[in-house]
Image (cartoon, rainbow over all chains, first blue to last red; front, side, top):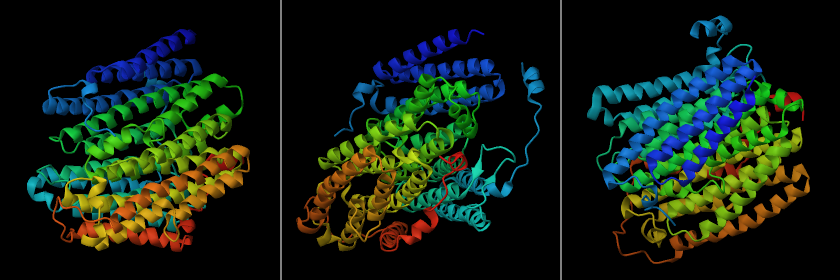
Length: 100
Length: 513
């Protein structure tokens, strides 16, 4: 069983995702980076599930994550669109009216 | 692939205990009803939807009370026979009641306010109720998948509620910041959960505890998993250093939503943390203990010090909430020492959550009442409040005294519970934390006292009309209920301990430390 290879792939994806969330200024790219983290989680779950012989809970968990992530991105894109309508801009560094 | 899955599954539906699920089902029905009224009657439904939402939430208390009468506290029920994934016990029941009552108070605060400026009001109550459903489910969730779904069910409507004023760029920004932080936090939490699933091979918290407890699991992976899950919920409870979204989101979103996020969403985060610690990670005290200790120490200190220099009342309440979260985390950080300490700290945290809800909802109601007139939440708008609106000034003083922890208001008893848990733990780091908490209580006097003296001794500002403020009936009720509760809890704490003196949920009790 090639568990380690899957875990390396998922941890690389996870790191790229975290870097993207922290470093990117474009709101849509941040959303995409979050999707990368969620996909890393799914790879982890499926690999561990196959390795542990607990495939059913792993696959159910992964399906729930896919479904909820779709709902989340729907809301997220709606928020980005609202911001764009009001300020013609989705650069996160310029969304800074609230501070103190 | 599906056929292969079905072959493996050999699925038999477990017996469902419908009575145990009745509060959730009632809440679901109320939410559906409110949404349906909005869709069918459109503009005409706007008048009645807050009433229906409020009455519906009170209806949800009926199955909660029947479950309590049925003796759930001493005899926990499994919603699905033979599995530990969804348990209704005394602990989850009191928290469900708390969430429903918080929801009712937020409905009272939102009535006639959310719709101001031509925004939709009736959809808002549907969102509020689905978010509450997530919290009520969270109180019983004893499985990683259920915890995750409950977390998202309570968060996704909350993102939309924070952005409710969709033409106001500040509300947009509040929602976007909350959304990005929340989604990032739940992604980190999921990665931690996938690692924990990997080392234990189960998503049920009690089986995870068994898998972690036998010592065969790889320590580094377990540590990474537990820490990532705690970090995920630290965002939700806005603990330092994951608190940066909270002041911005509270300031930009409509004030009732800010109150909802500050009280209900934060309580839900604590409920999830308690479920995970006491049911899932109980044997891993050497990992979650220090992690929570650091979060508690940082939240109390940085929350209070930053609150000292806030000019906006909502931001001040946000940082005060960060500091209060630190107090609750302090009680949780020593919970793993022994079963007795766990018992004390569960009671302390639940008591704290109840009193915190009463006094914070009250303080937000006063801020809401005044800012309806002044259109700002700047601290200057409270100058001389006693001269032009004495009743509000007196009620706000009650809440401030409670937040600062002055007897006889409820806040002192909440803090007392935290200190007794820390002292019962009887280890040096608990005493360090207790000292830090005591110092922080004194720092907090600084900004609560400054606000109180502004209300009583400064001259009223001249920028706006200073005739007595007339409030809608719903808001008056919210103020009276929260003020009464705040005073009653402080004068007669037995009222709360009667409910909050509950058994530690799940296996922590069974394993016996």
